Length: 204
Image (cartoon, rainbow, N blue to C red; front, side):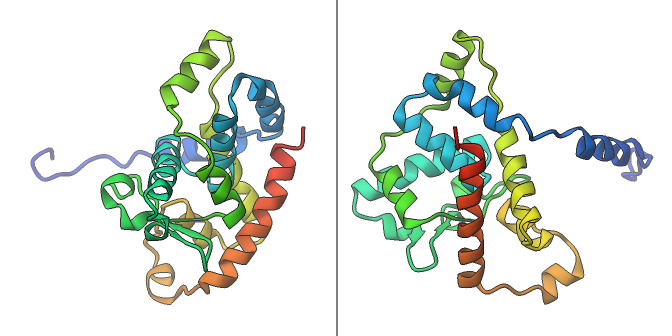
């Protein structure tokens, strides 16, 4: 069986997925952010907002945030940020954002928020983690990704498009052969949703 690549089908994974869906409680995420806010400096606060509105994983968020600053300083931000569509084109930087199991392709971000990032300084994830640990505050940035995906889906963006924004391309025939999206329309829709998301998460 081992040599032939055969293995038992594990039904536990489906059950664990079921439990995961119903165990997520996003209600206290705004309170958590309020609790850690004063422990973060201004640059880090901008970074946390960036994670929240893009749904990027923490490592991807660090790479993207710092790349925006670096390219802007070099006068090359247009190579990464498409201002017309308000989209960060992560796919252009394969070594950073396209990996075997975890990818990210694009993120919609308003020009105003990009400008805030450009005026910030690079951030370091380990420094944030150590400071919060020293203050006995937990690190729950993973929940921002889950909150983002759920929030966007609840605001009527197709689940398949939410998956693509999260770096997951479903293998269904519909997605790969029939799904189409107007980039400008999707950008407008997502940016409007982001405004509501910021109000919910950072209204303290």
